[in-house]
Image (cartoon, chains in turn blue, red):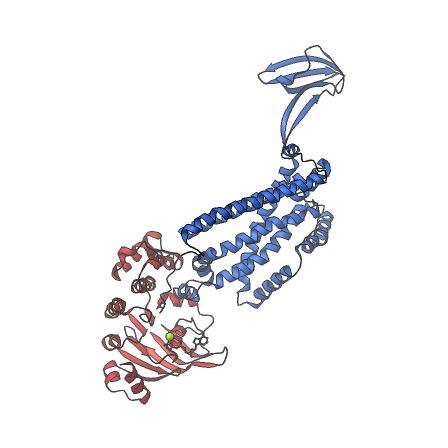
Amino acid sequence: MGIPTGGSPRRAKGAYFLWVAVFCLLILGTVGSLYYATQKVDYVWRWYRVPQYFFYHESVEIRSELDGEVKAVATDGDQTRITVEGEGKSLGYQVPSKGLRVARGDRIYPGDVLGSFERWRVGILLQGLWVTLKVSLLAIIFGILLGLFAGLARISSNPALKWSAITYIELIRGSPLLVQIFIWYFVLGTVINTLLARQGMQQLPPLWFGVAALAFFAGAYVAEIVRSGIQSIHRGQMEAARSLGMSYPQAMVQVILPQALRRILPPLAGQFISLVKDSSLLGIIAIRELTKATREVVTTSLQPFELWFVCALLYLILTFGLSMFVQYLERRTAAA
Amino acid sequence: MIEVRNVSKIFYPPEPIQALNDVSCKIEPGEVVVIIGPSGSGKSTLLRCLNRLEYADAGHILIEGIEVLDPKTNINKVRTEVGMVFQSFNLFPHKTVVQNVMLAQRVVRKRSKEAARDKAMSLLDKVGIKEKANVYPDQLSGGQQQRVAIARALAMDPKVMLFDEPTSALDPEMIGEVLDVMKTLAREGMTMAVVTHEMGFAREVADRVIFMDHGAIVEVGPPEHFFTNPTHERTKLFLSQIL
Ligand SMILES: Nc1ncnc2c1ncn2[C@@H]1O[C@H](COP(=O)(O)OP(=O)(O)OP(=O)(O)O)[C@@H](O)[C@H]1O
Ligand SMILES: [Mg+2]
């Protein structure tokens, strides 16, 4: 049984294609008028400039440090070994045979190019994407652990556990994420790094505080999802498990949580999708994630229109991938 | 086996309800006791107090001499000795039938997988549902589910079995198959406390019948006396309504 649709099936079919056509026209119209508007403000689209921020070709030149002479050039397949002698020293250089620029006996001054080669490097956008992915995944993992723990504490009968959980959840949910990020970085970060410095230890990079802010933020929401998931399981399940002699933790792990997980997964997916998007705020504490990377590229390339669209598209790929993964998990737990 | 002395239980929200009022009774080893009474008379509460699913407010409950109401008692250990069967079956829906029967054996009794499976299969055979060992509970009829639930409780080798209206949620044609399993258990000498409205079962199997009303035990007696010649007015009234 589907949702009732007005009209007979045959008419509905013709109407269906009509509305598909309307949809396509709407999309084309929107894109077209946006393009037209940018033409009006004399914006020049240069999509060809975008790929270099994903990958770019870098040419590397190998230069001599000595003032002397090429003593030996030994080619071994792709690689060639150059030995330069001078100033009473002897130095060896490895260059790809194709890029060899000197021959035996050449007079060499410091800074002379002995050989060169080209290589692919990962551009800023791709680096930013990687940082976003890394931060999000770490925050999701710690967020799940925190949320599971806080959610269980929230329904515990122990007042210390219960009230701690409530305090944590309400504090986090009642304040803006941006403020929380500032507190993690500028307050807790300063304190922790100063204490570490006093002990003569290394400073923690901003990434850690960013992950902590996101994980604690997500954890509070995960806790509420976990709580309502557990409470949605009929209490007869817990009673049956306990009446068989299982302890509370055993009953939780064996009986309640596996059933709750199925109901928890869809809202959890939504939470993690917002977490990926929220990670765009971390740029303000010097973490070069995707949004910050895009801003940097925009200032150097002066192609903001293309780059911001690309940035949005990359987030879309991440969130779409995540929701596909969760759907896969849902199907697997449903089959079990 | 089980001794209940002066047990009281009050539920608070929203208004105080005296579910049990100074209840005392005894169940001897091998005895089958059937508890009857009108709705809300405290039958379930009494049964649930025995294995501390509800914590009684006052009195003593001794199971094999162990005080259930002592907070220091290892209640999980007591519960392995006291099997319970619920009105709504409460099978674990995420586990197959045989896994339902194996789970507590593995987790609580720490039996090996093979030993737990062997035990589970022989119990499923006993309750006549061996061929459904590998299906999930939602594919079973109510009567089949309840028989699995009995097998699950038996898997812990309990000394006592508590049944709280085991057939009340069943279609009439399935009541018989569950009662048959219970009769077999009774014949084998299992100590049982059964809350039920099945008077035929009470007459046939019970050693004693307890009639409860308003949280108190009104009358106790062997079934032949109980059904033919009740002493209390309220018992008479109840029996006239139900028979
Ligand atoms: N968890 C609870 N919270 C509040 N009141 C309860 C709770 N459990 C039972 N009661 C109340 O205690 C009284 C006794 O309930 P109990 O379930 O023991 O009756 P019963 O004899 O089993 O009735 P039934 O035949 O309907 O199952 C009832 O008035 C019931 O409303
Ligand atoms: Mg009841």
